[in-house]
Image (tube, helix red, strand yellow):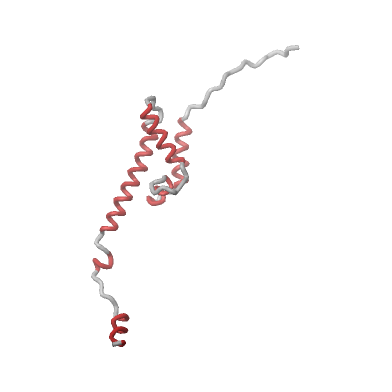
Length: 123
C-alpha cells in the first residue's frame, strides 16, 4: 500500500497543451484591462488638449480633473496615473513631465502691474 501511494506521488502529471498554456481567458482579460487603461490615459490626454482654454464650467472641470490625475504621483488607486503607465509600459515620470510641460508652456503668464521708473532723482 505504501509503495502504491509513493508511486502515485512520484508519477509525472500529464497535461494537455490547453491545460498547461490555458485557453486564453486570462490573457483576454488582461488585454481588456490594458485596453481600459489605455482608454483612460487617452481620455485624459484628450481632455488636456481639448479643454485647455475652455470657458464653460464643464470643460474647465474636465480639464482640471485630467490635470490633477496626471499630477498625482500616488499609487494607492488601481487606475492612478502611475499604475496605468506602469501596466502599459510607459515611464510615468517621463510622460508626466512631457504632458505638464505642454500645459505650462501654453499657460498664460500672469501680468503684474507696471509702475513707471523715475528717470530723475528727487531731492
